[in-house]
Amino acid sequence: MPASTVLSVSDASFAYDKAPALEGIAFDIAAGEAVALIGPNGSGKSTLLKGILGLISRTHGTVSVLGSFPAPLGAIGYVPQAGELDPDFPITLEQVVMMGRYRSLGWLHLPGRRDRQAVAHALNAVGLAHRAKTRFGELSGGQQQRGLLARAVASGPRLLLLDEPFNGLDQKNRDALIGTLERLKADGVAVLVSTHDLELARAVCEKVLLLNGTQVAFGPRNDVLTLANVQAAFKEVGIEMDEHTVVLPGHEGH
Ligand SMILES: Nc1ncnc2c1ncn2[C@@H]1O[C@H](COP(=O)(O)OP(=O)(O)OP(=O)(O)O)[C@@H](O)[C@H]1O
Ligand SMILES: [Mg+2]
Image 1 (tube, rainbow, N blue to C red):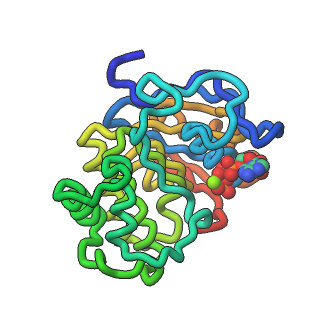
Image 2 (tube, rainbow, N blue to C red):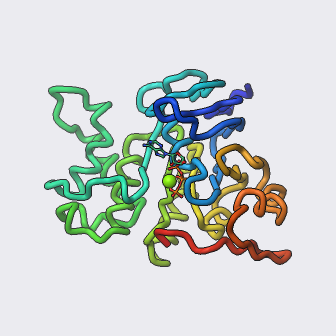
Image 3 (cartoon, protein in one colour):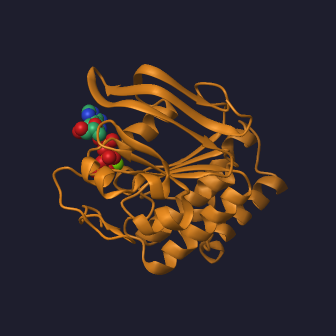
């Protein structure tokens, strides 16, 4: 495993209780590299992210984050899919982002100057510094997503797992997210982002992992996004493609 490898998944399968959900996964992500996770609804994108986190059981193969599993404490930042969160926190955006610092804060310690700086920096990075004192539940859906990204950024992760961060975002929020991901990559963070959005894949991901209950293909973006591969992944739904673009069919949440 090269020294720069942050995530390494080898011949891995994952299951909910006993029911297999995803099989035959094998790929690596290096520091500063971003991989787009692409596949139809129910293809296992969220399942793979949860398997890497250790939230569901792995029935075969290995997962290693910086050489160990479970990942070293604080190594992973995770932003779950929008429908899976409870946005009704009765606390401010700033407090939500400070939650990303709890590991370094530890119990019985009040936030110090470094924690406050990390929170301010993360809010700046996602363009929400001016909403720091706003109650989280009063933010728009797109702003809440960016707030949760800020929380993950504030924790200083080496691997960032994002589950469909673009769903429901307008162009301005999308551009802000792309800019944030570019900066994190430049700082050496490894990124795995599930998306239906090929524009995001093109903008920030040099590699693509194509899923459909199993791994259809993994590699450099342009090698993987061929008509044959995309048709194999999106079997039951029509795909349009010319030499420049693949058009994925509409998805729920889009
Ligand atoms: N909590 C669960 N218990 C049992 N099976 C589940 C659970 N969550 C997902 N599954 C099953 O695992 C498979 C993969 O689902 P997953 O949510 O990972 O797909 P996805 O690619 O994230 O889909 P979407 O694009 O809709 O978010 C599906 O067959 C799904 O029914
Ligand atoms: Mg999902």
